[in-house]
Image (cartoon, rainbow, N blue to C red; front, top):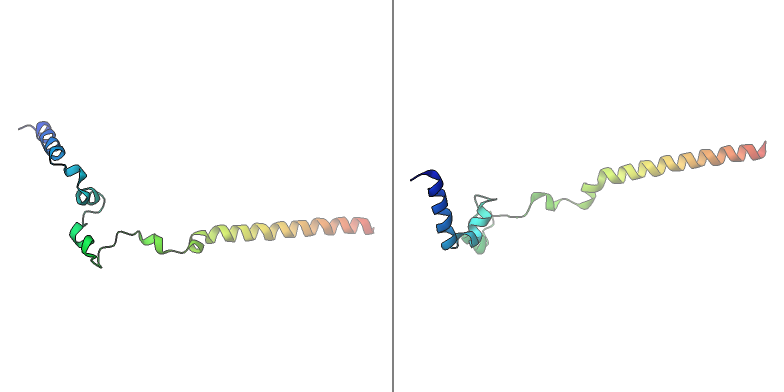
Length: 92
């Protein structure tokens, strides 16, 4: 049987058998080691949560907070120098 017709036959068979709606096969497309029975029984070694979800929001925003603090510091220095120059002009 040619490869094209075999693929077509397998896909039609899977549609008839509702393999597309099988959640285990759907999840196994992204995580091949997934086992639905282990997941339903609550196996401790099976974790579907992303590791990055445990990170704090502050860890994610550290660079932006640092950049904002530097911007505020530079802005404060510039404003202070400008007022200092204006005060010197008024005194003279």
